[in-house]
Amino acid sequence: MPRLLRLALLVAVCTASLPLSAPVRAADCAGRLGTSRVMEVDPNGLEVGTKHFPQTLDLADREVVLTFDDGPLPATTPGVLKALSKECVRATFFVVGRNAAAHPDLVRREIAEGHTVGHHSMTHPMTLADMPYDKAIADIEKGLRADDRAAYGEAGVHPRVPFFRFPGFGSSPTLLDYMKQRGIGVFGADLWASDWNPMSPQEQLDLVMARLDHVGRGIILFHDTRGQTLKMLPDFFAALKEKGYRVVHIVPAPPRTAAAPAGN
Image 1: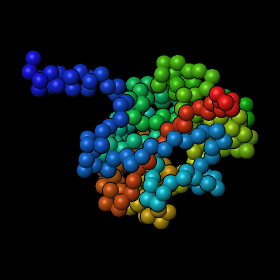
Image 2: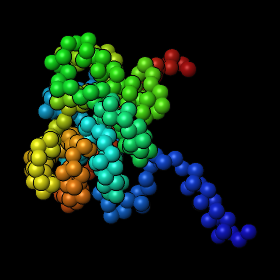
Image 3: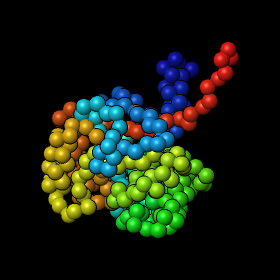
Image 4: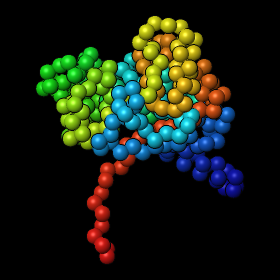
């Protein structure tokens, strides 16, 4: 067999064996916004996002983390995923349990395309802090299980991705203590697009870029359930690229392991 043909066959076999979530090569993202780096985040005791907490992630100037809440929904989430893929951008989706249970194919697609899937309660009450404690915990736990069953086919005692965002940022000291005990990190945001309010895609773009230029970095909150956000995304990515912003993808840090005894 000629050498070039053998090489071509080898490349074809190796490419076919790659999982859907294999990292995208830098060459494949040439000329696109891309994802500048991956940040491993320890969820234990984590409370970040200055709209809710005193501290946020350790981001450099002009670094942003893109997050999407409330999905998945068939009318909009596939378009959001397509827009992200076109620019080689990785994001974090905080999914609602009942939507994940209804559309497990979309949750699995988010994971297959390299995104992080966190949790946003089972029913998205406004707010969990206004509910009786036991009912709030039940809604949180039911959502964790529904999300993991949709994503992985089963749910264990601990969620695969221990990242959570309270609907409407409606936490309480007792609920935050519960999340700490469970080893689940809590995310707020540093800015948002206010896309729960009706506006044109251009108005939304102008609003979020003005807010981002003001703070210079941070966790951005969008909703993949909003058509205006979907229509805005291509221009948003173009604006990020033009202004030199870089996208950071967050993933859970590996579980801590005990240190080996001295002398071993």
